[in-house]
Length: 627
Image (cartoon, rainbow, N blue to C red; front, side, top):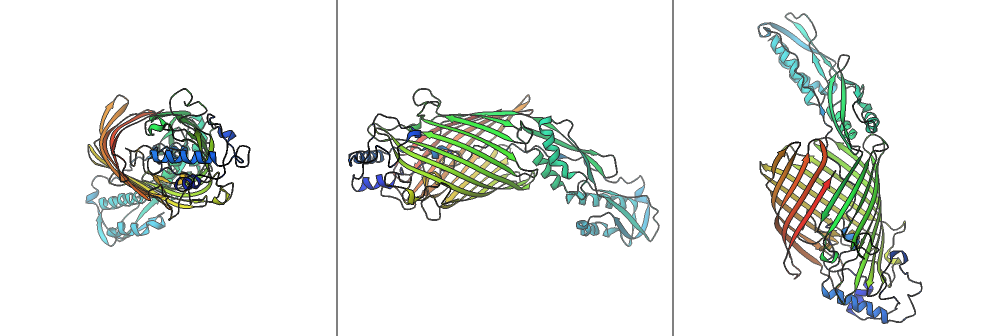
C-alpha cells in the first residue's frame, strides 16, 4: 500500500479458505446470509454469532464458487487500504524565513594610504575566536617582519572580517583602533564579536508573535553566534502554519550589537480542492477532495486539518451514502513541543471502497481505518539542507467483505506498527533538489493486533502466510535539475523489501502513481517487495502577469517497475514487471503576495506488463487549488 497509487495486487489476494476451496474442494462449515442485504460494518456478523453455524456446506460452496468466478473473470478490484495515502498531513510550505544581512564594506583605507609605509614586527589580535586562530594567522602572516603600506593593513583587516563571515560569524567586525605605528611596532587589530541585542516583532500579527519571539529568544545576547544558528531559528520560527516571515538585521544601540527585525503575513485558515481520475473503472475513476486547515488559532503554532474525498456523485453509492463507491475522511492535529522543532502529529482516517462487480460474480467491499501518532524532529535545518527523523505508531484495521449476492466478512487485519524514518531535502550547489527517505516498519504482537494464530477458517487474515508481526524497509529518492533555460529533468525511485516474508495487504508496496507507473490504475500492481524508477524530461516556460506567474511545462516520461510476492498461491504470480511511457503537460499559477496557487496535470500514457494482460492506454487528469 503506502499511498495513493500504492497499487493493488497482481492477482486479487483472498484468504486461504477461499483459495484452497478454489483449487481443491468446496465444503466445510456454512453460514446463512440474506443475499439482498447490504453489509453494514457496524453490525458485521462474527464467528459464534447466530447465522454462522449449523447450516451445512451449501453456503460455503456458493461463496467459494463465486470467488472462483470472480478470480477467473480478471476483475482486479481495489480495496480501501490501497487508495489511502500514508498521511493526510499538509506538506510544509516553502522556506521564506531567511535573514537579510546588510553587506559590510569593512574598513575603508584613507586617501593616500598606499604611500604610507611602516615596518611591522608583528600583529596582535584582540577578541579573536579560538576556532579562527589558524585562519587569522594565515591572513596576517604577510604583515609581520616586513615593510607594508597602510593600504595593505586596511586590506588585511577587511580580508579577516570576510573570513569570519565565510566561517559563519556574520555579526563579527574587525576594527583597526587608533594607534601610533613606527618601524618595529606591533599592529593591533580588534575583533568585535557581534551579538543580537533584541528581536523586533512589532509588525507581526498577534497570533504568531508570541511563538516567534519565544523561538528566537535564545539568540539574544549570545556571543560567537553563527549564521547557521540564526538561520535554523528563523526557519523554525517560520514553521507555524499560515506564517510567511521576512527578516533583516539593523544596527543596535551599542558597539557590536544588532537588532533582528521580523515582519510577515499570517493566514489563519487555509484550504484545498482536488480532483483526479487515478482510480479504476470499478471505482468510477474519479475522486474529488476538500480540505480545511486551521492555522495557529490558539497562538501555539498548532495546525488542525480536516480532509474529505471520494466519488463525486449522489445516489445509493455517492459520497454521503451508506455504501459509497469510494470515500475517505481524515482529521489531524500537529502540535509543536518546545521551540526547537519537535512536533507531535495525531491523525485518524477512514476509507471505504465498494467496487463494481461484474454480473454473476462476487462483489466485495472494504473499510480501512488508521490511527497514528508521530513524533518528528529536524536534526539539521537550513535553507540548503534539512534532515529530519520521525518515530510513529500506527493502529490499522482492515476489513474485506462480500456484499453481493450475499453479505459476510471475508478477511480482517488488525495491525499495530512502529515506524522509524529519516528524510532529507538538499538544494545542491548546481541548483538541483534532492529528496530522500528511508523508513523501517515493525509490526508488533500486542495492543490489539490480530495475529495469524487468532485467525479462523471463517475469518482469516487478508493474505495467506502473512502475519501481523513483520519487518519491512522502504526507501525513496527524487532529484530535479534544470539543465537549461527551457529544459529540466526529474528522476524518481522507490523500493521496498519484506526480507523474504509475505505481508498483509495494507503493508505491500504499490507501483502505480504520479511518480511511478502513472498509466496504471491506482491499485493495479502490488507486492511484498518491489521497485519502481521513473524519469521525466520537461520544458518549463514561465509567463509572468501582474502579481504572479503562470508555468507551462510539457514533458515526456518513462517508468519501469517490478513487484514480487512471497509464498504466492496457485492463483498468484510470483513476479510481475510493468512499464509506462507517454507525454503530458503541467500547468500552474502562483501569486507573489497571496498563498493561493493552482495546478493541473494532463497526461497520456501507455502501459505494458509481462503477465499477458493486454496493452492499454490511459488519459490521466489531476488538479488542485490551494488557498
